[in-house]
Image (cartoon, rainbow, N blue to C red; front, side, top):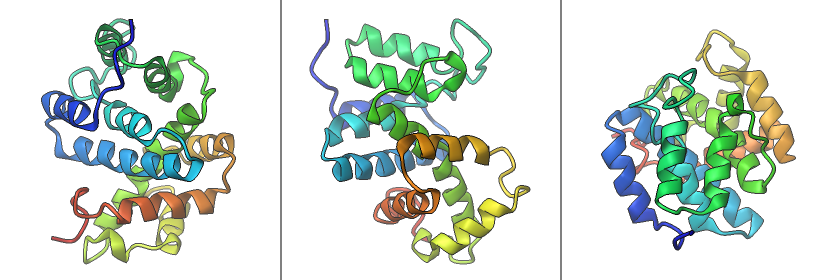
Length: 195
């Protein structure tokens, strides 16, 4: 039985309950901003897409071991969403964002979540090295420069991002600019307004 779509408040309360790490909270908020912007662009269900992005890493802080086939991220969260009767589209997208689970990204939401997930980390890191620490001072060129420097945020897999953005059907630079703009519009909530 599927319950009505969870509200943004319900999702945020869950995030606050499960995620204490400020960096991880910023990450899910950044992905939410980007995915919501795409939902508006595609003329689809912005609330569902936003909530999905907000909870996609819900269990990562408590269960970071992705090799744990029972409780490892995102398996614990997926069980929770099913128990709560959350929409199948949300559950599938969260499963598909973890490519090691082997769940294919099929829907526009699946592909959008994958394409926005890692790139937000590169944009946040690019913001942190600016003297102002204000995302509104970051432009496409500065992100491209950091993209080319493979030592900068070396853990961020550029090839995976490229693959996911291609699957979304967007040129990479256009996607980076789109995500950056969405994040800039939410600078204060993301704690990236230099204050």
